Length: 78
Image (cartoon, rainbow, N blue to C red; front, side, top):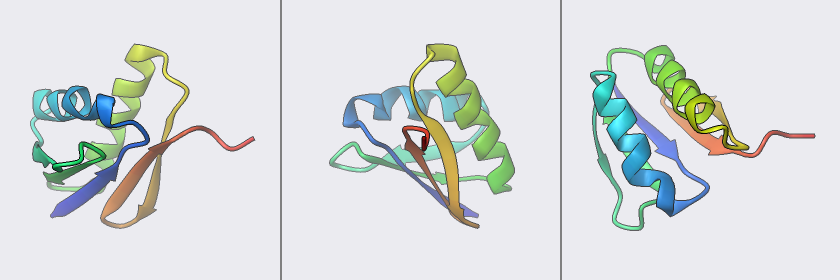
C-alpha cells in the first residue's frame, strides 16, 4: 500500500526517510522535502516507525494518521 507522510519541516525529510528505510519501508522524498511517499504492508508499521523517529529525537511532533493511507507529523494539539 502507498502511504503519504506529510512533514512540518523539510529539513526532517532525509532523516524520516532513512528511519523508514531502516525499518524496512521503501519510500521517496518529494521535491520540496515536505512529504515522503512510502510503500508498506500496513499503515500501523509506518506509524510505529514515525513514533520511534520522533521519540529518538525528542522533537515536539506527533504522527497523526489522517486516513488509511496518510500521516502528518505535527505539533501536538493543546
